[in-house]
Every structure is written in structure tokens, then in C-alpha cells.
Length: 123
Image (cartoon, rainbow, N blue to C red):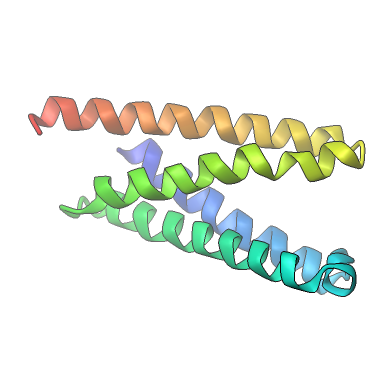
């Protein structure tokens, strides 16, 4: 559960930092061209990041409900790691596409470890 907890924290804070950087440096042209679409996307990204941070803290503190929240937040991450790289692939930014592939693989590793720990717990 430690891997899943730390992974959730790092990715959650990383998502907030990445979007903060993009917004602060004016690298989100969709704010002018597609304001509604990007607003909904940003809300989804922020919800994912916050859910990951909450589940990461809960897992590391070994709270009873941590696994349940972590499964949900990891599912949110899996969705965004599948959907988001399309934007960067369209722009030919292949290193960012690769980053999402790594995030997706590690999310599945995290989910597998969580499922295993639940199985061993007898739940």
C-alpha cells in the first residue's frame, strides 16, 4: 500500500503543478478558443488530482476507507491517462505521450498491489 500511497501523492501533486505551470505561462490557448471545453477538462483534472492526494494520504495513514477511495481515484487517473495523450499526439509531442503511457502502466501496478493487499487482508 505504500507504493500506491506515494504514487497517488506524487501524481496528484504533479498534476496540479503541471496545470499550474501551463496556466501561469499562458500555454493553454484553449482558454480563448474553447473556454467551456477546457473549463470542464480542468475541473476533471483537478478532481482527479485531489482524489489522488486524498487517497494517497489515507493509504499512508492506513485509514479504513483508504483502499475504496484509492480504487476510485486510480480509476479516474486511468481514464485521464488514456484520454489526455491524444491532445499531445495530435501536436507530435511524443515524450508527453510516453509520459502518459508510463503513468498508465504504473496506475495498473498500483491497482494490482491494492487488490492484492485487500485479498491478503481477507476482505
